[in-house]
Image (cartoon, rainbow, N blue to C red; front, side, top):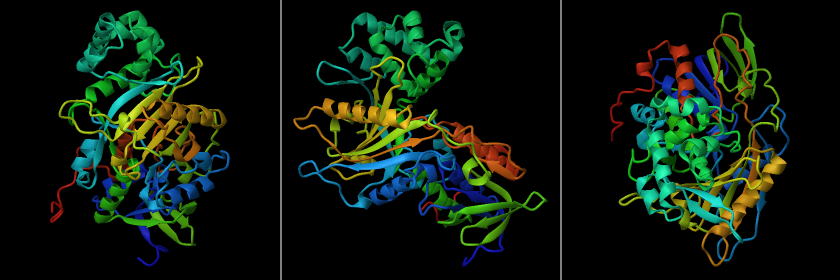
Length: 488
């Protein structure tokens, strides 16, 4: 298609973020004409995976303070001297994820990828160990969190009484919904208090169990009602796809890889994709259609318009540092194999690990570090990537992240402490409340939550939009028959 100018579409989707990409895929075989655009030169939107040069250009674009027009602010890159023979490789040797979220094996997204026939184009790697970085006399100690009966009874760091209490709690979590008499009165109680009062779990175990929730909040504000379903999600997911792990990460760039595969499959199904094409102006026509004006002067007519609040509403409320996460991406000059042990007999070698760094000062939130080995396909074989986040404003948060990453690297058994070769720090604002009333036939898709694990709500939001546009029954959502020749 030489030009879009003057064309008409049933649906125009703005942005190739994961929700928009899944929606385009779900509509691609509906018989509707679908145009999918993105003002960027790459797929993925807020979940993009970037090479080094792309990441540095991205940081330049998002270096300013928050103004309500973007999810990101305060981005900056720091490059350090090469460590010995290890140095940064060429730009395309890296695929750095803006959204390195874990996907639990119980996630509703995974069966949807299978039913939509896109799973064959994706490769997933196991997330193995959860660690807590505990402060020591001179350096911090990396302590693995037990995740099952065998782990607990092999762990020599706590006594038999503590092991029995922990096993009692894990049995309870397995079907906590059926035991409301134990926890409902304590639903709004801080989770550590609940663990102590109901199960007699000593304080040294609180940080370990809190780490399984991935809660970005302080221990005092992480409630029992919040923590129990997340702890249950973690434990119930272990073993579904293989022994020793309960979560996975998409290879080659996190959620961006799923978005890009969805876009490719959408194009095969008939959707039209145009990158480097921004939406400049929306003009309602009075009959529930819209005239859209794009960068470059083209305009099209559309019956349904879909995108994020920042893309398709006239003005989103300004972002502030009061909510959101300060994040960093660090390329480390060592593979750090200690973080990726095989966690069960006959199990796979994981490519991901989670490290919780509890706050030293009471009342502060923890830092979470998600480590990706070279097997994740994001860096050369002699390196690894650490993704860190903390629920603090940028100035305070970047200092916490730097200290947490340094403490983790110092805790790794090595004669020479590995160093970050390259680090990008930035703030990601929580814009989930930014949507306001939209006109008919204009659908605002909520952004992904800032959680470290992908929430099932993303698929529910996409399904709701798909249902509005197609009027189809849920049973046919993302369920495609195999096209002739596709199995080959």
